[in-house]
Length: 323
Picture 1 (cartoon, helix red, strand yellow):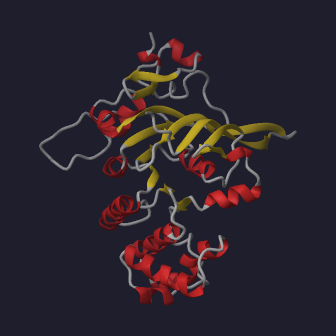
Picture 2 (cartoon, rainbow, N blue to C red; picture 1 turned 90 degrees about the vertical axis):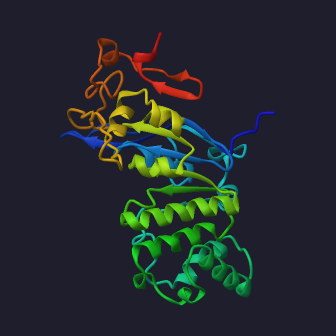
Picture 3 (cartoon, helix red, strand yellow; picture 1 turned 135 degrees about the vertical axis):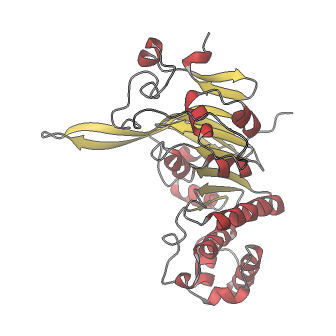
């Protein structure tokens, strides 16, 4: 019996309109351009790529903070695009977000206990004493103490603030958490603590994560499957072992070659890409990676490669693997 995924992302696109030139000619920034994947219950799906590739925009569309230009997002059989405001509000407690910046994501005028309790207030869950008890429980769960609830965000370190953000995300017992680069603003020593905390919470509460990051070593530590994005498109998707042991797409190969190996005796050939990422407002024709690809052919310049299963469970969008 096939188990339906918790969430399905089907060919979503997000184009932001803008005006250019003297006469205000309209153009579009193609932030996300046809991305598809699914996430099973209880797994961690990693989404990686360079800054500007559209991974955070994808996360915000899953959260329904941005409306897709095209495509569909299906959560437990519900098409989020077809729901009205009240239906989305009722469903939203099932998916929460951990933000990148632990400084900007917390209201400096609110005490920590008010920040964590806010989702409970919005959704009308629990009464006053029950909320207070829930807040104290959540503070303990994320490694803080109940008395920390009386303090304000500026009284905490970056790692502690991110723990508060995690506690807030857990308040309404969500099924899915979108973690948008939750450790990129933290020191390396603190990053490992937060990653371990997220894994412990996943095991304890049966959480499902979409973990967005640009650091492949971080994603490898926490993810079960990984999707690699480049200029708004998915270029490779596989389980983490397949992806790191034998990456197929030239872009993924270059990213993994840049990951440091904690053994000075092991040497890895570094693949250095030439040039900069093209503008999403004027992407190259054909394969968008062809301007930087060391294996570019004439076909790459004119035809968009199909995103297909190259090996069992391993999907790639590259003409090198087309028949």
